[in-house]
Amino acid sequence: MAEEFVTHSAEETTHWGREFAKRLRPPALVLLTGDLGSGKTTLTKGLVSGLDAASEDEVTSPTFTLVHVYGKTAKVYHADLYRIESFHDFETLGLEDMFSTPSIAILEWSERFPLPSPWPQVRIRLEHLGGDSRRITIL
Image (tube, rainbow, N blue to C red; front, side, top):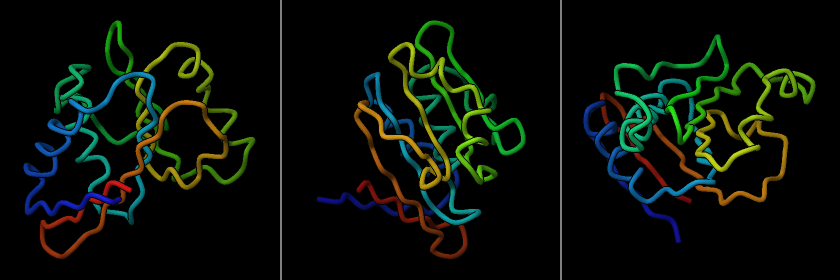
């Protein structure tokens, strides 16, 4: 059964992510979907912060670097698959390390993730409702 939440500001979306992070245990894939500007990176700021892997200010969109790794011991991977067009593109990301040790992986544009995974998956859809409001649906 899907859970649905509406936030009314970037701060509320980040706060929701911090609170939701308490439900995550490695290994886990957090698969984010939503249009451009729907709040995926804003939500990720809260998730990474809530997992004590980095401060919200340290979390940035990996649109051009494609993968960020946060945390010293318990790793949190944050990948943006927006630019991935083929399996070869995916292979060049170097995500093998991610699967070598139980971690949390947060994947933006997860519909482009080409592999099955034995890790538990949490699917979250974000929708822009106008202004600063977002609908967050856990599928």
